[in-house]
Length: 471
Ligand code: SAH
Ligand code: SF4
Ligand code: F3S
Image (cartoon, rainbow, N blue to C red; front, side, top):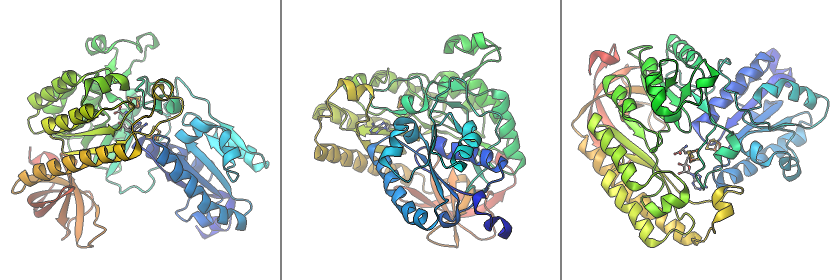
């Protein structure tokens, strides 16, 4: 290690922003860099290569990156040979414009171009700036084994697809991530088996719209529609993939994100209900409760279709936990439309939600077609109403769990107390558990004794050797 520290050209520092897919992409980048002889460092000051894997989803996300870049200015003044690279969605959106706007940036690499890193780094070595933002229709990095950075050794994310073919009016993702493509189920299963062997206890399958996962070795079948895919053994759809992943090990918990209301089929719910190790939790973003707003958002469903999916979930799994994303103050949103969102929240009663106010993104359908006409203070007020209602419901739901016995997976030591572990239950809720002699990665049967909006508090009952000890 010391020897490497003396060889500054081989230490990289990488930081991820945005969604879990970016976290997973950084692990792929790490694998590519380590193949080149680089080693990771957690100290930005000692790195010779600093990489920020960026997000463009809202303007604030991009501002965060611009502030972060300022921190590196000082380091670069001291260490002239330091190279700074922007990866991910902001790289894809702004391309070479980034070189003009942020003088210290040397390298710009879009999400489908990480295989070009070796040659791009060579260009940097010659004192040039380097850029590659080509999007691909095929790239899934399926053959690259991610290097698990900052991992707790217990929970892992596995990308099953890339890109997005939906065109939600507000969203920049189709522009920054390109067309949707599914990764081979063979390579997904290989990766899942590998993490089980390494002792991981939980996997989350990732995609912008996992329900449209479709893979076939026969390229002519790749575009097969979802209904046909279900009956064609040559095509793997999401329900088949989910079942195969659940069968890898009965002691591996399986989660997935994100489900799309227009594509989530009953066969996925049916598979979930049959496997004790598929967590009973679905993130099903609705964005708005108003049909007219949903139409402007180009979400391809209305509130009736959405409620039909919620009813189906409850039919298959009465206790399934639910979460959503909301955008307050989208273009043209009226008080009535906002009220419809509050009404829907009351009807569904989500366990938790991610809530944002609308941020216009250049180039999107909404930016081209509609005026961003809801004043900022109105956006903020509506958002705070959504948050207050959601928090109240989350607390009520959490309080109903007091007294329940639940199985939790221990993830890490609490930041507030070294005698407490933070674990997670099936419903994706954080549970505070006494540390005692338990270990990170243990399944523990607990009894819930108290609840807040975000966390459950529990007393331990006993360690479980197998997840299936209690069904
Ligand atoms: N693929 C997922 C969403 C990924 S982006 C889906 O379709 O549900 C995560 C969330 O960011 C979105 O669900 C949306 O609520 C929010 N979001 C996306 N674009 C936004 C924008 N321009 N302004 C505010 N929030 C936005
Ligand atoms: Fe964006 Fe819509 Fe695709 Fe989600 S489904 S990533 S919101 S375009
Ligand atoms: Fe952000 Fe890109 Fe993910 S825009 S949310 S990092 S796909």
